[in-house]
Length: 306
Image (cartoon, rainbow, N blue to C red; front, side, top):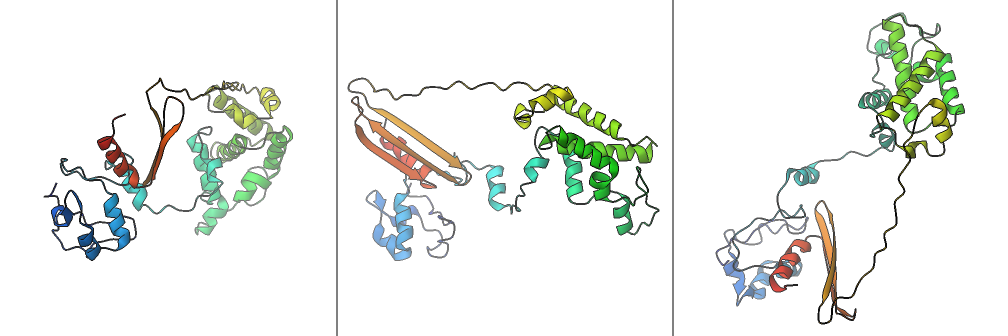
């Protein structure tokens, strides 16, 4: 242990001790009578860092081992490193509506492209400098994103139809957008008819297919099961969870019982425990948080056998 090089690093994220301790300093240089030499530490570090050093348990018989502080087990992994260094962007509430397991990815991507105005309707092509004669496939209006998906006569009837059935949230709106875009493309490239009846039939078909593939969960039809049955969509009933009764039992006479719990999050951890005797009386309680978790756990395993 005495030959270990003192690690110079960022102990508490924001107070780097690099430059305060001479390079090559070993533990033995700051160690005295089986413990840290507080006088020498105080001459090099602030009192806050001295307290941090004293909290570090050192197993004198252990070999050198690097501990990755950001993971719960002390081992390096790329996920923790990525989460530590990435710069996450702001989360938008609409994202949870566009991206979830009850909608196929192609439908989610279409809704996402519509949100960012990245669909090749005539309006967007003109903005890119491609000038064409624009005409919607249900009337003589200029083709724009709003007109294709919301304001043309057929789209207005489609939205009103499903709103009248009482279910116009979660999965259904994304499916409606997909069916409107699909009908527009078929009319443009395959000369197919663009009709209200065909689009509504296609939406119902897609909803039924999702249900048969177990993609549509019953919680997304809460309060609208009548509408689901009217469309021919079969929703699997939710399983009722049975309550489980939990109780603490006293240990046998002369035996102690230790109850512990822990919580982990990327870069942080905490745990606590309560020791009681056979009468249920509290003997002692402990609790450690954040980076002290791994160190205190090693100390506990070293000194106590439960």
